[in-house]
Amino acid sequence: MYPSLADSFSFSLVILESLAVGTPVISYNFFPIYSVYKNVPAVRFSPLDNTKFAEIVYSSLNDEFQN
Image 1 (cartoon, one colour):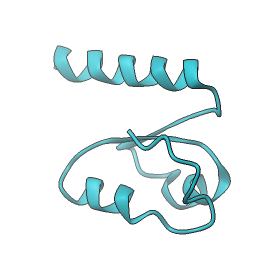
Image 2: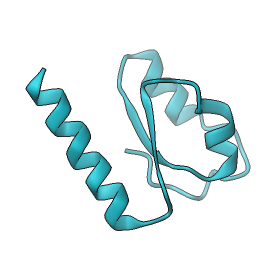
Image 3: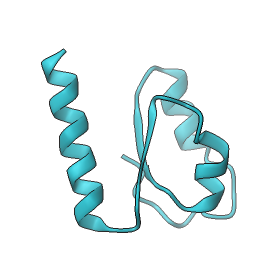
Image 4: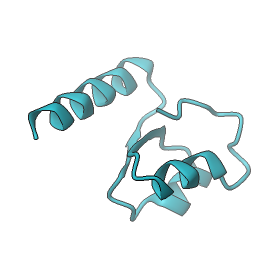
């Protein structure tokens, strides 16, 4: 989970590091992060809504444990 808006004007190395070790990422879909990672299947995006973010996390965990 990457619920931060603090890195909104930079390239997030945290996401890149997570992807490098095979960990999927969930982030808000603000432009800087979305524009870099939008075509990466392991990165899921949420609108700027805490409830939607939580739903995506829950859904992702269920998908992971069902496989």
